[in-house]
Amino acid sequence: MELLSPAGNVEKLSYAYAYGADAAYIGLKKFSLRVKADNFFEDEYKKVIELKNRFPGRRLHCALNISFHDEEIDALKQNLDYFRQYPIDAFIVQDIGIVPLLQKEFPNAELHLSTQASCVNSEAVKMYQKLGFKRVVLGREISIDQIKRIKDSVPDMEIETFVHGAMCIAYAGRCLMSAYLTGRSAQSGFCSHTCRWNFNLSELRGENGNGSANQSHIITAEEAKKIAQSGFLTIEEEQRKGEYFPIYEGDDFTAVLSSKDLRMIEHLGDLRDAGVDSLKIEGRMKSVYYVAMVTRAYRKALDALEGKITQEEAAPFVEELENVSHRESTTGFYYNKADADKTTTGASDSRYELAAEIGSEIAGSDFDALYELGQKNYRTFTDELEKMHPSAREARLKDLEIHTDRKVVPFEKKDGWRMYELTALNKISPDMEIQFISPEFVYITARAREYELINPETGCKLNWVCDGHPCVIYCRHILPDATLLRTEDPEYEEGKIRDTGR
Picture 1 (cartoon, rainbow, N blue to C red):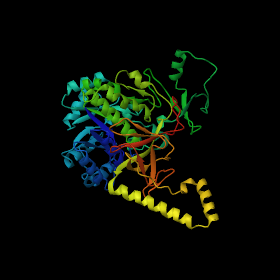
Picture 2: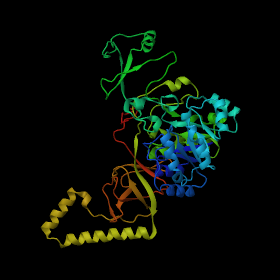
Picture 3: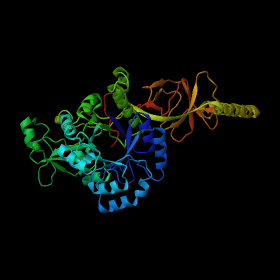
Picture 4: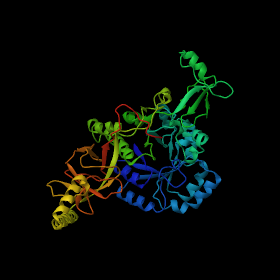
């Protein structure tokens, strides 16, 4: 089975490939349902071509999955020359109006039907096959038994399904809630994720619509059902006081607000046996850390399923999914419709935050030059101190005791230690416990005094570093390409999902 990972920008695409994705899906300009992702623009096609050359055999899928208006089709036509510069293997579309255009202009690219098309039966799959589609991304409202029936009916059609990530509460993601509340249409890629907001439930009474449920009265299940079907219930978003939105539930239960996250990593064998060809991870708007960790976990789980590694070898990588931002998990509609109907509250959360990206090793003459630079700067510093008047020197030394970051302390060579470029994303200081993660190992912990942060412009030690500050890291560990550095979030509480924002 193919492992398909999200890539909201070039950087995420690089980590998706490095951490084991067979393919990645991107969006271009304004034609993707994740407009708020960075997406790809200008001359980034050059970087994408470089990545595909660096990772031969990896595929690139392009999402053109919005609902197109005429003016947007005009814009698509105007951008065809730009699109041709990308090494696109497949287009993911929901609007069949652009199919003839893509078939004409990109004859070598496959057509994949977006999950937004809500394809959930074999007859629809047959129809899309006749239109020229190579693959169907089935709607999330489908079970494993139904997938098997579709594959048996249309065995030469590739089947792709989502296996991990946030799920939209609306049918196949076709939600109007965002447009209704904020004027930002989910179908044009501007979803504000209103289903994740915090709402207060009340009972609508009287002409002014203001009322509240009687909290002192304990109602029976039958009474609750009657209230739910009465048309009197409303929700009020906590930051939009006075705006009431009615809720009506019919005979079939429908979850209204925030759905749980999908997690199928323990059930990949069932998906394989049902005939699934591609496993899709949600998350083009998620972080580099999320893309890397989730891709890695599913890569190892797939490798174990295919006998390339043991289940015991894969297990610690899978366990690390708990250390990635997530809500409560569910298997969605795959086994039981009721599982998908259960909602949750709170924002995605993680005990770790990505603190830095590790780059190339600094060795040989480059390492020696940085060492000599540090020694030179230290000699200059000490010479200046020696030339000072004793009282001025004493004042300077006292100042350095208070402001330790002003000290000039060169790094010293240590046997077995290695130096790497470091791009800081959050604050790191040498007294912190840090962890390295990579495509090859689960994680390596480095405690205080087991690593040093060094300014590459001076060759001297740093007391701290944060985003935008030049830095290299010196440690005893061998760090493979695409290694990331994470630190624990001090505000994280075990077992508590924080409301960290929408």
